Length: 450
Image (cartoon, rainbow, N blue to C red; front, top):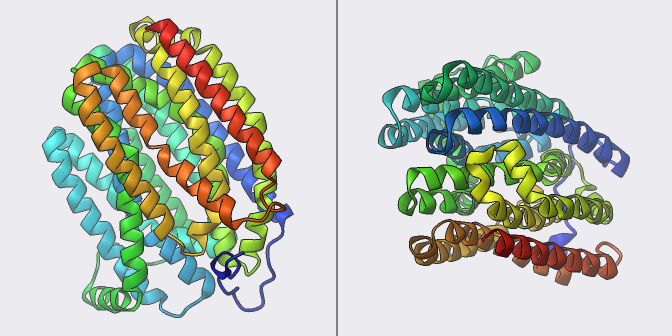
């Protein structure tokens, strides 16, 4: 096994490596909150989709997609977690840099919002991004103290409540509900998360970057510029994979078709709770303890078992995609039953790749993932530009599925580096066969619905 996969970050002084049991407890807490948030999202999705209709719902979904994409560009959050956990001594400078980055991203978000939305929505967009960025320092402090599961619980509860609030407002307002009314709860959720994090850490970090903070930001940039460059590249590549299908669909599909595709994609995205929950708790855990890489390899064995069970759930959802779409999204979206079947299958590959490679990011190995996501994003652009104008919705689904090239490439890389003890080949073959079977079933359902 190459040295790069066995040398972890140094542990904080006096700390012992975190065991698998501790990781599982944290993952269980995060998974529970992710499930709760996902259930609230699933419960609110029918109300929003059916009340607003495909056209307005498409704009609402675009707002949430962009909010996720822009907040993910807060490239400093993983760096803050690593440096704070190692107590590297330059926390003050990094706090100043984090504040400057938050305001920069908020400015970019506001400008983009003015192009795509009304001024009211653009303002909400900018405030939500700013609150997320300002909360990064406090998130890193909580991670250092081993409270990342609690931090994730706060975030999931806030976003679940926002989804319910948005659904209630749409229900009250009907199909003519303005976008800013449905978007406001999500902006409020980010502000609430910032307030709760700051209260939990007792921090008094300045919200506005002062002159000393700007000087500290320059110093932090010089110290960490190579890591920051890697994180920026990773964030941009990941954003490309996450959002290309939406922008391609927005460019070439009519408003009704775009809303139909967005609703189906949103329904499929609810299935990502397993991978995102585990990744959320594993990253800071591995970054904080010297046993991270070893624990990560041990966790792979459990992760593969989880995915074998989850694959059966996905297969059932693919088989029942038609009735499920009409039940959750309503008869207005019945044409999307085949689309959802394929998107459900793609989500299985997405979760598998995300769940089996979290320690790469924890140890700062962003280059392989950046290359994989960038290559997948370029492929998505080509596939979408060719297929969406010619075959419409099916082309948008093909564009989205092309993103999974990234996870397949990362898994292939791990097979070469991980031992058969860490990643049992028989179990990996079973997962591959299950993924192929799910895809075949999805394509059959797609052809049946066409």
